[in-house]
Length: 69
Image (cartoon, rainbow, N blue to C red; front, side):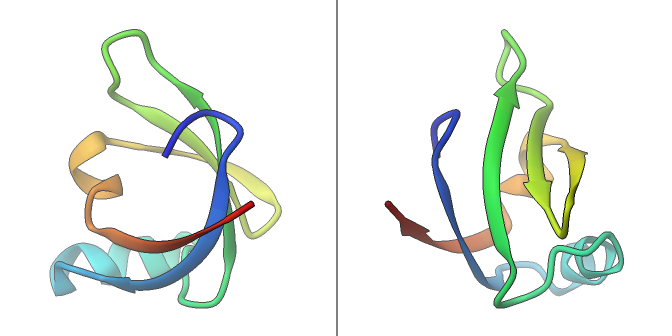
């Protein structure tokens, strides 16, 4: 996803990481949008559940998202 794009969290690829992400508010059905991406692409800042969340690239890659316009 690019800065400014958004989508809906559908599921996760890694069950270990999914627990951590869900505890931070990133749950299936929640809207998520990309706010910022660091110059070296790690970390990224996303808006989810009404707050900004910084994620490592390896964590973000585990989120399966259905992109919206």
